[in-house]
Length: 234
Image (cartoon, rainbow, N blue to C red; front, side, top):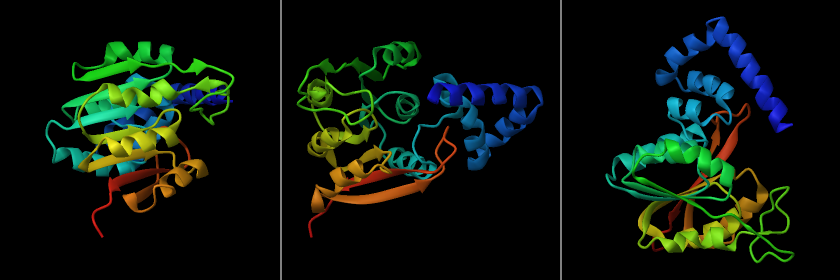
């Protein structure tokens, strides 16, 4: 289904480009969120096109928030579970990005496109009948993501931004909280899913939560991205 949808969008994008429609949208895109979103629909799973549009795959409201946050923190340190267009976007706005990816093919496709301030680490899951840390994503049964989640411990120090946009996100959140700078920000994507909201809720009053909902690059429907900060003293 995903492959068929992508093929249909790519074909429609080619037709609109031949008619000049896509070019007109692209000229408006730098000044218009709606135009950027419309163009991005035809760039789904195309890392080069999404990079050219300069958008990560989060809600536009969260993109604006994180951009403002990083603008006030030159040299920010970023850690990211799940690489892609967000890696390139973050790299252009921060001092360093440490990104962890579980998919070998995706990591190798992305690696030649990365600037010098990105450290991309491939950490594939381990096949086992009883995963210590599993993923609820369909097709990932029998895979242990313990090493993937723990990869944040391979880099010392605190992070200004931690992005949770890969596998085993509930376990990643638990690790992220302990590695976040006191005034740092966690970006937790796709919190439309109840299990992710439950993971955030399980941390009780430790986090202040802003949930953004709306247009998201490359998707035809609205989604939610949560922005999490360490809660201050009561």
